Length: 152
Image (cartoon, rainbow, N blue to C red):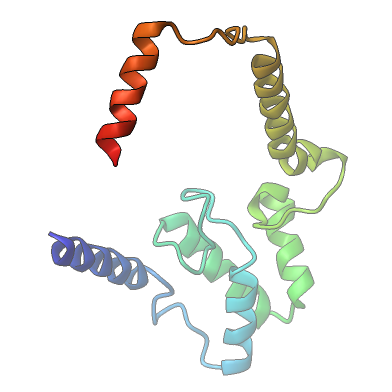
């Protein structure tokens, strides 16, 4: 069973790699290709949303990879190529969007949700009734003694 799961995990990983950058997309200049890959690792696939465009097999990711490579071939700097894509798709296309008023919700909502959950848990634990400590009656004491003797 474990071997089958491991084999399935490996196959899923290999399928994922198979959808990466296609050879037809790659630039002949290794320096430009390295720059294009570095830029592609910064950009989110708008279909998959948790993958960079370099890792995604989606058609839109393919189009963005080609677009980035065309911009680099045309002479754009890395920043200009990224800005071109961000201007078209917004900050959401960045895997690490800038911290600015428009993205405060994105950056700080996880912390707010954790704080609200912690406050709710604290209030719940603080307000729940605590049963009073009552001494054991005779039957309960005998049962406890039997349990303790059985343990030895």
